[in-house]
Amino acid sequence: MEEQIEDRPLVTFYTKAGCHLCDMARDALDEIASHLEYDLDEIDIRRDMDLFERYRYRIPVVMLNETIIAEGRIEYSDLAEAFALEDV
Image (cartoon, rainbow, N blue to C red; front, side, top):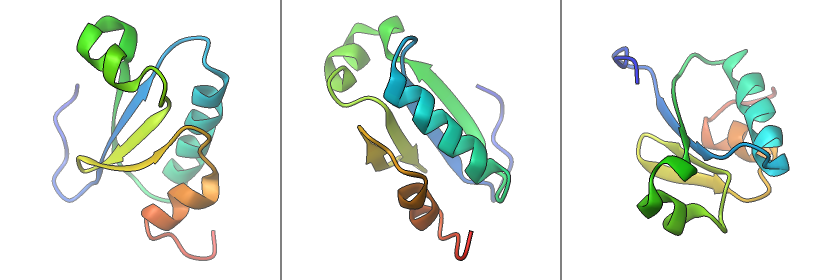
């Protein structure tokens, strides 16, 4: 992970390849990034068995500054609300 720039939110995105819901969530995160800069730590849960066990039935999981803000079927509107984006 790159060094986080101060005052930018840190988004942790738990995902895995071949996950349709993860692809949709990533598209929503990309749309958020067009309105707000954030640091992204994208983690493939298959690289860590503990993470795999914790999130395998919940992915995708999006955390904002260490707080889970969305998981499973993630809608852009849910992320926009969590990031406090209005009228976007």
